[in-house]
Image 1 (spheres, helix red, strand yellow):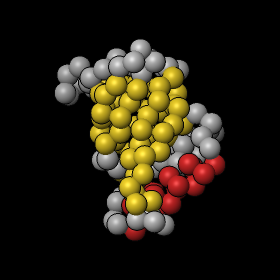
Image 2 (cartoon, rainbow, N blue to C red):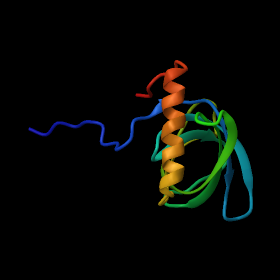
Image 3 (tube, one colour):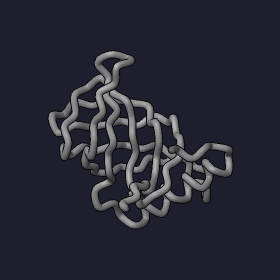
Image 4 (cartoon, rainbow, N blue to C red):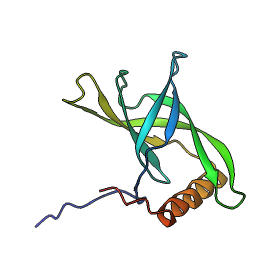
Length: 124
């Protein structure tokens, strides 16, 4: 018997922070995250995306160690796209951080721990 479970490597947290997306075409858009993990994030958009498309993001976070606001710049790959029926024309986009530097992953992990301490909830 095969049991299906969550195959994610990283725990996700519900997070509604703003992220700026930069497409290779030069277009950019600011979106609201739905969830965040050390390996990627998900957001809703009305802009078309394609699986395996490479994008860049600017993820503003608060460094819990210094209490300073910082922006983490990352290259990402679009891993999945789900068309939404409401609001019409929107999609939910999942992205994976593409070979992030260890220091950036460590900073994101600290930020996620900080969010848990602030009462943010795990994402399903």
